[in-house]
Image (cartoon, rainbow, N blue to C red; front, side, top):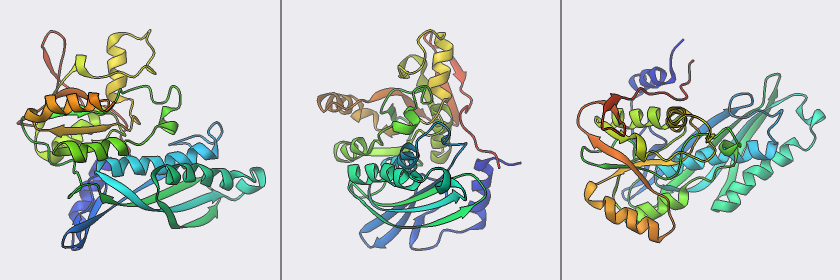
Length: 310
């Protein structure tokens, strides 16, 4: 058994990055040079019945919607707008006999996202088998500004932000109905110099560790500054509610860093434009993530959250 993290490291060592690829395995998407002054970003995600949704209780519409939305969240993290989608399916052999409208509803959910963000379904593949339903979506995109955002560019002294409250994504199925933060990503690309960005799919504590490791930096975050979603039960203890915000995952908010000198102006501009931004900490030198409690005590924050094992 190995972790997804170790598997990715092994692949990075095995497969060199060759032109036109300028950024390969390890970020939210891959970056290809299309010409001297333009780049294309490609993202992909595989979703499985029984892992990312449960078709016993989840509609095909929401399954299709989520399959595209998680990829749109990756493009938002890279600072890119979508241009095309490619969808591949593995459908259980008896699916259409028991649910004749399954594919129609699935693609209606997919179309909700393509219509919302104005890009094309450009191709894909379909097969049937004796296993559970699986859907793979690949999206292409182009940067909103001159370059895509990377998770590896956080710098000591940066302020750390998230774009919304965290935790409780499974309680009311927010993980199925969330709206990818493309509009915030585009706004940020026009408003501030973003240093590092990624989306929060596996939980703040784990994803922040990933950003700091990729950037060769460390972070300090304040427990009292972490926004906790109203879906996290109010009757839970403060520690349990904080743990949910740090580790539940599938929030699909954006985590990003920017210069400390830009922080106050950025928050003021966000407020004027009706955009939620929460400053939660700062980037430091060293390694790891420190959590600061209300008394100012520092403790090492372990990377809890969703970790795949293979």
